[in-house]
Image (cartoon, rainbow, N blue to C red; front, side, top):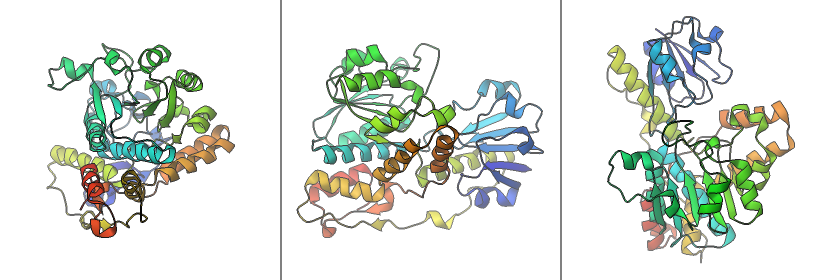
Length: 383
């Protein structure tokens, strides 16, 4: 069996190397010539998987180590008899931690409290539900909108879009869909912002760029309807050299589609694909991987006299320095066209290892207040 795997997938050699002829390479720009004799294709979101790529190849199984699937033409795969597997929820905790890091960073930078703020969460799937839990840990009131889940009879205190009017913070966690009963393309648009928005409302988008109409967003920000903006995804991301100057210059936090890029999330996606292939080909259970059995690292304590919110931010930024990701992307402003695209892609390709909160410990002995330790544990830290 011959497997081609995206070079950015972790633990591929450890999991698949002994059971296949393994070839690794870049996922963006992948073509038919790269798939000669390949039986199994393992990708991430930068690879467009469709008839153009696979027609005439020997590929019988496609696995995407991602939670999203809009880069995969599943109808084509089904019609061609090609089995498909992916990693639903594999990076959900990573995205939720990104949102927590962004909220704390801006709250401390701009001097406002998070406790008591009303946050509208559009989409309550794997990611949205974890975001809601972290927001509640920070003392925020969560309002959940998810019409498809409501239609499915899920018992939760859902609200209508109109009921989100006046929220302090708005964050989206939905797939990008173009048709059906609830399409999400340009869900957050000019009319929507005018009807729902509260003056100075913070807007975050970590799902797909097309969910938010960026032109309408910057117009609303210019009028003061929208305050802080956090973007990890962009309308022009399929041709990343065209990511706008407005997105780079005007967003309070702008990062290169890495919210879900924790090492733990990537590993989870790879493990899910191993399980799918093991089921198909009758492989043995998951092999032991020693590097996954690590003890949590004790975090340094905050400065003497730091307040509760500053303590939370200190711990979170040690675990994940979101400011660094923002500052690195700012360097794209001086680049144009293909050079900007190559730089954007390079930030993703060469992204440093980022571990999730559970890999770090906080304690009163290190200088955190008992109240801060409780909240940090609720956010996912060890203790």
